Length: 113
Image (tube, rainbow, N blue to C red):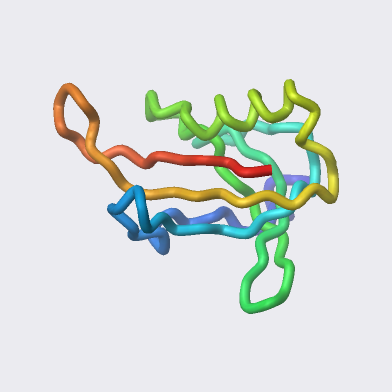
């Protein structure tokens, strides 16, 4: 699939929760297991359940300009456990928090397979 044919990227702007106890929850399904780079991030192709229908999207696992590798690390950890397989459904829970040292905003993630 060429860059022109890529599915839309997940936009984090719709995930607004700032409460770890009330996280945004995305229902996803593994489409492919091979990550791929773009000029902006390391990505994976998944299906997202939106209004009861599955839609193909590109899930950015780590932006190139950011040190935040939490989602990529979680993906790799689950991959090493053998949980990442085509067709496998999982939940991505996310919220905005603050960094410990400088109190900057940072997106946190939890993957549940």
